[in-house]
Amino acid sequence: MRERLLADLDARIAAHADGDSSGVLDAQALALVTELAAAGEPDAGSLVRVAALHLCRYQALRPALGEADLRLARTLYAKLHSVDPRLVPARVRDFLGLESPHDRGVALMREYGRTGRLDDLERAVSLLRQAVLEERAGARDHLRTALLRRFGRTGRPADLEEATELAREATDTS
Image 1 (cartoon, helix red, strand yellow):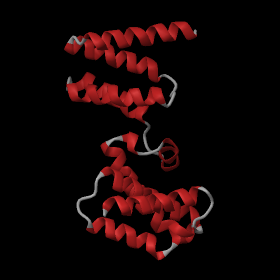
Image 2 (cartoon, one colour; image 1 turned 90 degrees about the horizontal axis):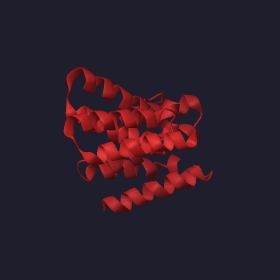
Image 3 (cartoon, one colour; image 1 turned 180 degrees about the vertical axis):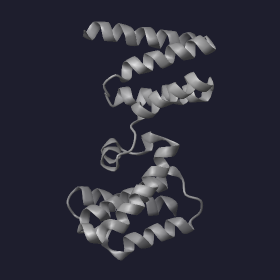
Image 4 (cartoon, one colour; image 1 turned 90 degrees about the vertical axis):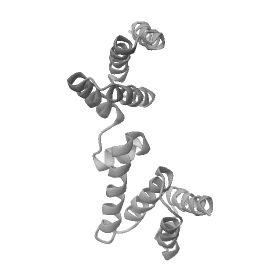
């Protein structure tokens, strides 16, 4: 049942992206969200779709009529972002003014420096890898630094190897 509801939401969101907003604006779209909520505890994938639906509705409506949808989208995306910034597409993060994986990763490295909590450093490495994939300026240098810090803490040879490879790539592109 959940899969059918998500597929229906995906189709409506895709149609909106292709220029047909009727599927995100009709009453059935909101009924799907209600049905999805009744299907049990929402997962991240469900929340991403509901947030996207509300953002599409905001885009399709005149600003005064879409404000409630924008508030809902902003609230859902902010919650998703607090769990993992990678759950929020880059263009949506930019539109809503949310922190990028790069910025969050750098903040977690600072937090690690302050507290020494390894889980902060682990999350920083993960987020900085995403930032590298997004080709964010400075991400490779920050990832290399995080990997070297983690190597210093855990002694994992793979971290040193990856940091060395990142340094080699930086030298090759200079």
